[in-house]
Image (cartoon, rainbow over all chains, first blue to last red):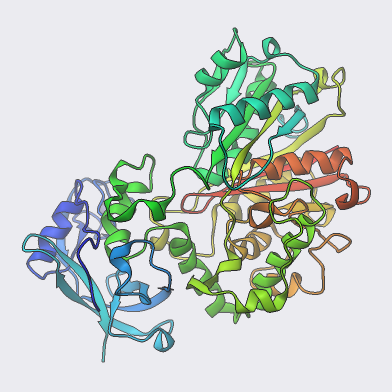
Length: 137
Length: 393
Ligand SMILES: [Zn+2]
């Protein structure tokens, strides 16, 4: 996957900044309510299941299964040109949350619902690392 | 007992500008022209208007509209309804509530949008800063979608469409039927941008993939123009210039979680899935009673999923339903009789309401649905917010 300069980096606003701090350590962590145990992603201040404000950043297995995907043929930014066509799946993580990330090194025609994938980390800058997927096993 | 809001408010006037690609007018000029036409259509004067509902980004602010039109007694101003293309239909509900409660007598609802000549994502280059996008979706895109290469509706809605294709084995002929019906109807609409520009099944199947599963001809147009709607009470409508079109049922629905398109347990459960049964119950009609359906058509696949959410057919059955001309004029349920966003122009759903009103007044000439009595309009916006209005003459 070729990513040229100008590839968008996460804005890292609010709690998203904490998510990406763990990515920088090559750790995928999601919030988990310390009162009812519910995992959540996107990051939020409050548990939608029980209303608790208490949570920890719990370590994810990094593994999941494809729920759906797109394959972008026409790049919407010049920075995406070298990468297109590229595939962006939605993945049901083992912990029960859904996550979006571009999948590396996987031809579009091999994409299947339920296909096992795992997280890898892409160090975009010395400060910013983002998760990607690759096909597992 | 009938719902308290059923048939209490009606559309009294509609108006539109030309729909073009390229313009030397401003969206304010366009919105004012469409508003003036809608007022004239209703037989009302600016001083009769005391309410304005407009959607930020898709129309000038109510205060601006009032100041320009000479509306001196504005007392009900809503500057935002709900996300993007769901806003126009949701605005009908807000206006109906205001009118039924007596908060406002006559409500103006314009949309003026230059999606062709105004801000376009592809012009932004790499400098696009979605953290400044207002509303509930900008932060999600900026932090979690865009760094992964997903940044526009064709991408987000594509996740839903791929899931649909995979769950039900949908063939491209199904979305094509939507695109072809819209184009066929556009040929009968003097305002439609695509009038006289043919589209065949072969053209559709040969059109390039923009973002799988969407081909070019699955995607709506970008155009410049405006249209406007004037609403009033059922009592007052009797004395106005045109026959009233009643808001018999209306509702909006929001998929959960509303700020994360990809995060839903079932991507095919959209806002309209929850809203449609409420609107039909309020109107005391069923999908079988509909004479036409102006279904929000940002993408052909979205229309298929909306038809199922409406209850026109069961989940997974829209690809069969849309075959054999069933959704074309003369068929069982004509959709997008004006051409829609796909082939008329992109007025963010407001032109769907204008068309429904004209159909129910039987003003549509060669594209008129014969004996039209009841029709539905839907809206879809942002990350799948849904709105619906059931209209009758
Ligand atoms: Zn909890």
